[in-house]
Image 1 (tube, rainbow, N blue to C red):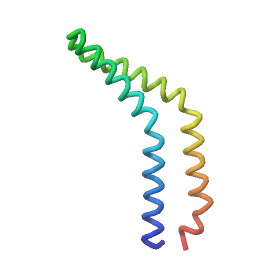
Image 2 (tube, one colour; image 1 turned 30 degrees about the vertical axis):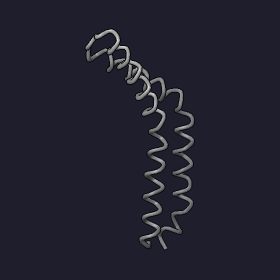
Image 3 (cartoon, rainbow, N blue to C red; image 1 turned 180 degrees about the horizontal axis):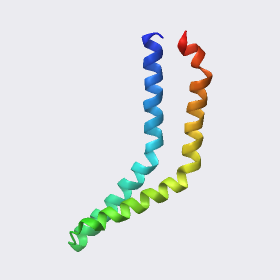
Image 4 (cartoon, rainbow, N blue to C red; image 1 turned 30 degrees about the horizontal axis):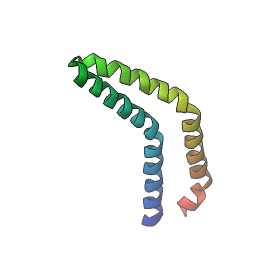
Length: 89
């Protein structure tokens, strides 16, 4: 394995990881901003008010995005396995 192959594989793995984490991060960000604005407007400073809705929203995002997440992971793994002989050379 040449250094270029290793760097390319690592880059592809990091890009796939970031791509897979985006739906949950985006949902968490939106819910967090909305709840922060709500807390600032009402001056309610309860920690569970932000924690519980974020967790629920992230679970819903995982459930909704799960088919796409699995398809992306299967595609990455399939490409890795198919190119394994080229990586070994």
